[in-house]
Length: 415
Image (cartoon, rainbow, N blue to C red; front, side, top):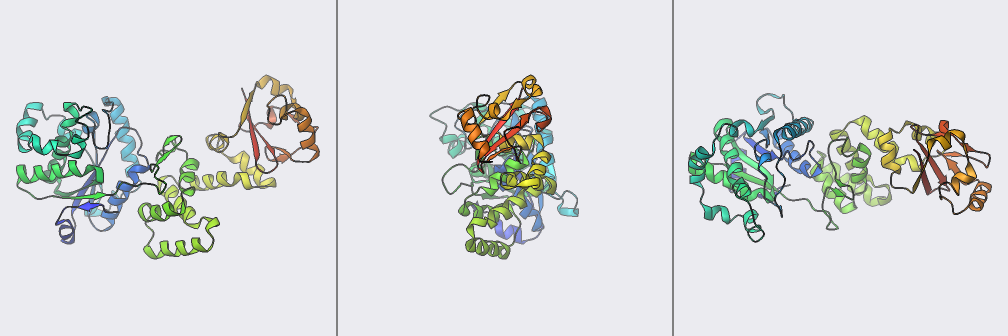
């Protein structure tokens, strides 16, 4: 999990309990799984006996970090920022221990020390210690010189550098951790501590996680995979990990869980014996879903994942018990048709429903043949040609799940 570290860092850690921090960007009211790497490095840091600080950037969120960005980002107003800060802090509390004595985790907000820091004082007390040449040499700046960069973003590294200086001076924080794209900003902080405070501080970075197929980690067709269940449901969250490739799963289980080396190697050996059982993926998905959400959410996600393969009463019960948001996650991607509720209340015969009303089957003749084959189910219940769809048949009062054979699904939605 270590990409790079400043010389002397290991020796400093070996001296005994140290304080270190990572900055989290409050551009949304939830972190996504890209932030999990940084969260886990703080978890390990605390478990090793050190004191972790999670800095949420109330001030820097108003500015915007150019690192790894190709364009200027939107700045946030105070109301949006405070909402985001509250959401991020709540998520950090799920992972870090905030009540364990001297190395209890703390959340700090850099707005607290920047809100009364005026511009003239900042350029006098901070800006004079870092040269323009030093700032221009940073990759995050060089990569944007051709396309343009505002003065606001150019000065971001000074603002982040001052964060480190403030925490060093006020919280005895001697280590900053972060993604490898943050190296330039982090060492600006160590330089400011050296020049302004005549002190010594250290840097550790983690590698940026990439998927084996070259696609971006943490992204799906629907966008980011969030830690907030209202943005990414526990079902979709679980599915992200369960669908990881074997190579990715072996990598992720080392980074995102606290399983021991021996446990992981045992899982890998089991997986090698029967790859189709996806032992590593299941262990990974279960571990992370419980820690980010809950055991109850994991059970719902597993039930939802298995609903397509269940039969009989178990399938019927499982379908009824799926929360609506999970139901639409599971079946949202299958072909579907909308039918006015007033027609459903009167009742629609199964042949019309399968054929002319929805187009699920090519024709009413196809519908009759399928019914004779006994291959049609509605809401996982086998039906015959006398079946009528009515409002009592609807799941959550608005859906009917049609099925032909084992794999052909179709969703009817009442409007």
